Length: 335
Image 1 (cartoon, one colour):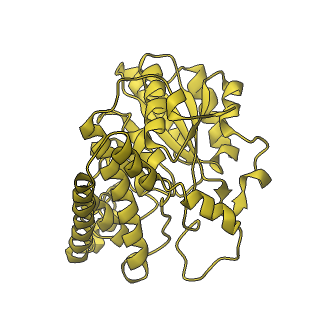
Image 2 (cartoon, rainbow, N blue to C red):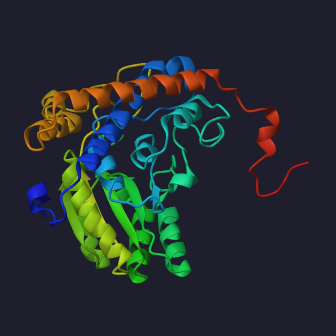
């Protein structure tokens, strides 16, 4: 199954100037947010930290294909997904700090972010754990008779877990409005896909569930936007789910650690992917094809840097939850 370039993607109306700038803004938000989170992790952020640096294009391109009232679920590498859906940086950073001003009032942390007002239904540290929730959201939309769609992000490792097969099968049988997007960065923690997966393209498994399956260049935000837009339109028309595989790469390790891991990725491989940095590719496209002046791009870069700085300041000044918060948000009120 070949990789779709932007030229081969479904022909849609061209993106507007404001849409192109919003794609850049959201990609920069993910990059700078995660870089800053990694920098201050040991001083402010408890627990594990999984960054999306290198994967910004597939996240933002996919999320830009959604409406505000559409749903989205993520995974353990979860900061980028709500940012891609448009969630503000300050409450997201506060959640990483464990502060009560966070999107989950400090109870979710880095791997369990949720922002229901933006349609971000949550992420999970359990590999593949959000996939049943995505299908549940799609079933809810179907039962209620709305035309909402759920975008389900998952990794190549999750494609080998039970929830992948169960959710794709059920979504196909019931023709549910869900788009499954595999973020294939080539590694499940430190294990290369070639050692863990029987097929080269995860999307080829779509045939087993009688749904469309496509591969797209995950470093090309516009190509991802176009192919996901087509899948969303199919879902909204009650024609059922689709499986899209975005070939991408994470520049950091599986998680931020205090020590260096043994070499598990060839140096040449990392360099080749860094040469296709999704943000650099998009900026070059804006300047060459869209004729955007560099000053417009620099303004957005400065604005996003200021947003991240303010998010950290907001988080530092916020309070931790009171002990009484332990007994809130429960199915049964404790006495």
